[in-house]
Image (cartoon, rainbow, N blue to C red):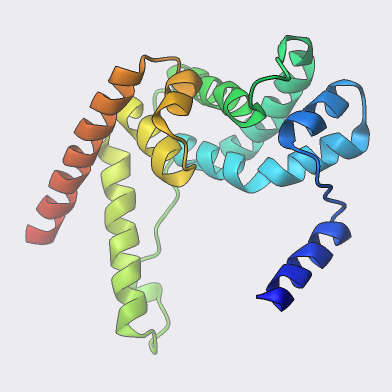
Amino acid sequence: MVSRRNAHERRRRAVGESKLTDEQLAEKMFGGDENATRELLERFRRPLYGTLLRLTRNPADAEELFQETFLRALHAGSRFDASRRFKPWIFTIAVNLARDRSRRARHRATPELRAAEDLPEKTEQRTESRWILHADLERALDELPEHHREVIELRYFEGMEEPEIAKTAGIPRGTVKSRLHHAIRKMRDLMTAGDTT
């Protein structure tokens, strides 16, 4: 445990991570601090890009929207309330940009899933089972309406709680609950239907 903590500490220092909160870094970023900007970009690259990829289903779009999210955030910095959390604020910008892109482009590209025959011959059965589950999840997510996929993404991939989802998606908390309930039921039905075919 100690060695893991030390390794994490060394890695954090190596990439220039500070012990500042996201909100403190945001204030510095809005004040023109390039190091704070780089650190926030690094902190949010994986979660924000991952969210955008799952929402757009297109790596190039996700990368473009990731960059646009931070550009918008920089321009809107004067409206950021430092007493509130930065993560829901930046995710709100990203989700809104993804929604706008989706409205403009009716047909979204979906990342290709590798065919089973493309897997190495000596792939263990456990790995193949995970791949099948991943494919089923991706298929079920693809078939969900956008508003259901959005709440699933924010809750289960980003770990946001219902109040944060409500704020990020701009919907009432009761609607978040309802959409999560319906989305989970729909995904379960889709995955069960996939098992029987």
